[in-house]
Length: 161
Image 1 (cartoon, rainbow, N blue to C red):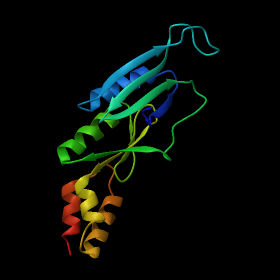
Image 2 (cartoon, helix red, strand yellow; image 1 turned 90 degrees about the vertical axis):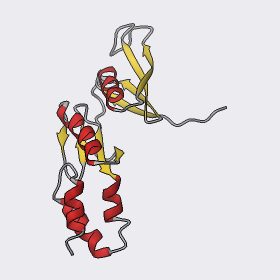
Image 3 (cartoon, rainbow, N blue to C red; image 1 turned 120 degrees about the vertical axis):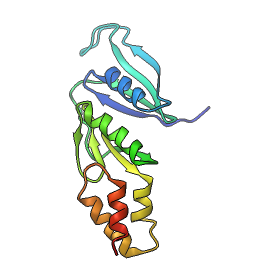
Image 4 (tube, one colour; image 1 turned 30 degrees about the vertical axis):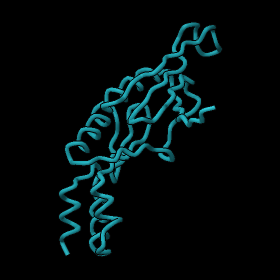
């Protein structure tokens, strides 16, 4: 048997809308299956969408239309590792611009309450892989002042010593 691990995300009857947004956001995103309930349930009528299966960047997800009982929290987030400022801007602006909310240090929340970290690879290099600990500290302090990450500003802070 092939073992697989799939992340299930709970939605208040908006799983299909969320999945369609996510697959439009990532270049290889795709919906792989939509399941409809075969009979009336306490919360849904027969033939309504109950599960949407989708893939993003090779990762499998299930969007479950479970109702309002459970909410997403910042305790779980998805990290998008970006290669450039343009790519960082693309993901950040798409998520926030589609009814989402900005937070600090590259974090944002989409309109369904799912939390994302839009994290340039260069940020990690400058803060955590920096051979100069003082430069890493300056880069981290600059990050603390940001919502969306500005790679040039992080680099300038790191090089300010």
